[in-house]
Amino acid sequence: AQRVTQPEKLLSVFKGAPVELKCNYSYSGSPELFWYVQYSRQRLQLLLRHISRESIKGFTADLNKGETSFHLKKPFAQEEDSAMYYCALGTDSWGKLQFGAGTQVVVTP
Amino acid sequence: DVKVTQSSRYLVKRTGEKVFLECVQDMDHENMFWYRQDPGLGLRLIYFSYDVKMKEKGDIPEGYSVSREKKERFSLILESASTNQTSMYLCASRSAEGTDTQYFGPGTRLTVL
Image 1 (cartoon, rainbow over the protein chains, first blue to last red):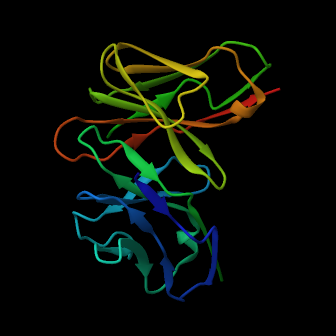
Image 2: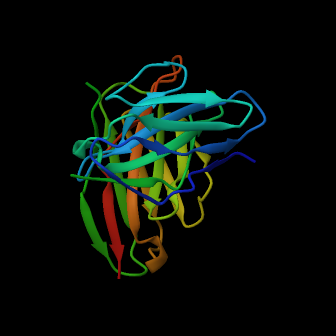
């Protein structure tokens, strides 16, 4: 069965410090991995996806198939990065997603 | 710009009531989804639809049904609301073409008393 694990419920970091959100998945096929973000009082939106291999708002994520991980990283956290972050796994052509439990990031000045 | 709208931002209902949550998208997307979002559990798929009148159960369909009579509209129905269905409900849509992402609505916070 497909599964997405985000081990940290809450991550509190200081402004300017590096931040890393962990995501591990279990899936026997070829996965599609995504990071979604939900800022306070806003709708859930895509942050980045592994096939794009791009950096969005300073965030990057590398798919490591050997470790079945897709950790999200940013070298210097900003206060506007405070949000709920979800890792998601796509496994079929319909676009269904399996979400992790989410990690709340709080960036303090 | 993709727009997914949900009929209500907040809804309060009583146990046993029939509840309709409406979702409309304006991008001619084939696929639509209903999730519930709970703290510590993330988003869980209730139902999805890949075409008009076509639906498939997700991971937690019990106590819910759906209706897709028009391509742009996907309704979630709670036949007899219960307190454990108090949650945030998110609708999403996605094109069937290629590897598009899902676009989410603002959510409906449902409280069942």
